[in-house]
Amino acid sequence: MMSLPPFVDAHTHLPFVANVDSIALCSFMAGELTMEAQPEMISVGIHPYQLLQKQKEDLFLLLETDLQHPRIWALGEAGLDRSIAVPLEIQQEVFIQQALMAEKLQLPLVIHAVRSFDLMMQAHKKIQPSVPWIIHGYASAMSTARPLLNKGFYLSIGVALFDKKRPIAQSLKELPLEKLFFETDTATLSIEAVYAEAAKILNMDVDVLRRQIFANFAACFKNSLDGTGLEGPYATFNR
Image (cartoon, rainbow, N blue to C red):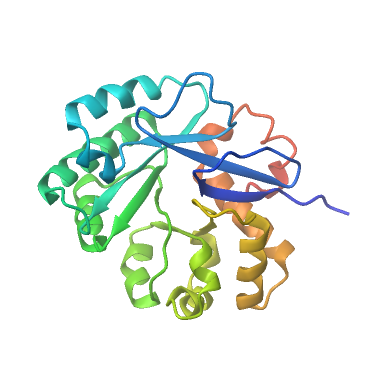
C-alpha cells in the first residue's frame, strides 16, 4: 500500500510539534522570530497591524535580520487591510517592497488581505511575480475567487469552513483543488479536523484530498523542498 503524505497546515501562529502525519508553515511577524526558533518551516513578514506600532524602516531592519534564519520557507504574512487605521499608501509601499523581496529570494508570499483583493490584483499586475502568492484565510465566494485564480493565486482556507453562514462553505465546491491549501491560523483545532470538514463538504475521501494538497505544497515550495528530508519520502506526491 502506498504511504500517505503528511497533512499540510499552510499557515499557523501556534506552536507546532512535528509528527509523521502533519507538517506546518509557522508564521512569525517581523521581530518575533529568534534564531533559536525550532519550527522546521517558517514564514516571516511585516504584518499590516505592525504598522500601527512601528515605523516601516524599523520593521524592515527587523525583517532583514529574521530572514537570516536557516528555516525560512516563505515571506509573510504581508498584506493590505482596509479595516485598520494605517494609510493604504503606506501599506501598499510596505507590501510591494516585501513582494519584491520574495521575488529576489524566490520564496512564496503569504498574504493577509482584508477588503483589498482589488489592490492585490493591481500589485500582482505590477510585479508579475514568478513565485506563488498565497491568500491566507480565504473565506469568500467563488465570484471573488475567480479573478484571483485566473492570475494564479493560491487560496488557503481555515476554520471559516465550519461556519455554514460563510460563503466559503459553499464556494469550496467550485474552487479548483490544485489551487488550495488548508490552515489553522490561530485556531486550536487540528489541521486534520479542517481537512475532515473540507472532505465532508466536497464529498470526497480525506486521503484523496490529503494527496492533492501535498502535491500543491510540493509544487509551490519546490525551491525549499530541494535537498530536504521531506522530498525523499514524499517524492511520489510531488507531481
